[in-house]
Length: 260
Image 1 (cartoon, one colour):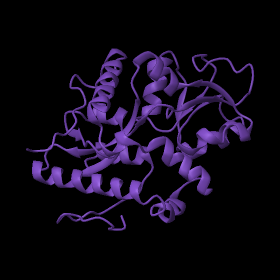
Image 2: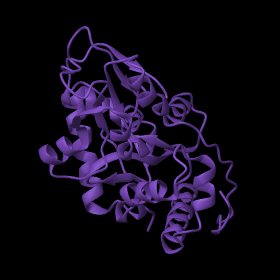
Image 3: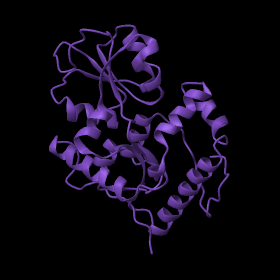
């Protein structure tokens, strides 16, 4: 965004949007390249490939299933309960459907509205993502389940949350350049830890540097720089689990391989 790395002759027009807006834009064919939930990537696997760099994947990074009540909340599969999710095609919603398949009353809202709505008792449960992982206790909410922890236990792989996809119609050399620019940008940020902070402060929901850096430590790691064999395997497992739950297409998510 700040052009601190070589754009390799490409011209990027960057839009910063909520994750579900990004997912929706991809379904409307608005973007050549976009960050997206792996749930959406499953549904778009015929049209897109995942870039090796730019994914959010790891252990201890999954969404939390929270309740408006600290005790005696029941389960999200109760017919008279409402569960908030941060977008129809988010990986958070995918995990809820995989692990709590009988949940009926799901309401999709912007992720930043979930905890305030739970505090106001406007819903019974909510699937919390991003910085809220660190602040839910301060807001008097209850934790029903760490969905990421359950994924790790059952799959023994890191949890794939989201990645950057490119359209298959792009020439391979263009996609390769995009991948190189994203790789260089992440490598620069990792080597210059304070450089991204001004941009992060401008756009983050939580404004404490301590919370922002916890967020970075949680979601940015070696798999962000390059998925490698472990990351690719985790995506394969997610594709299989989703298909078993009746979600996605027959074509598994494919990771782009750089031309030799």
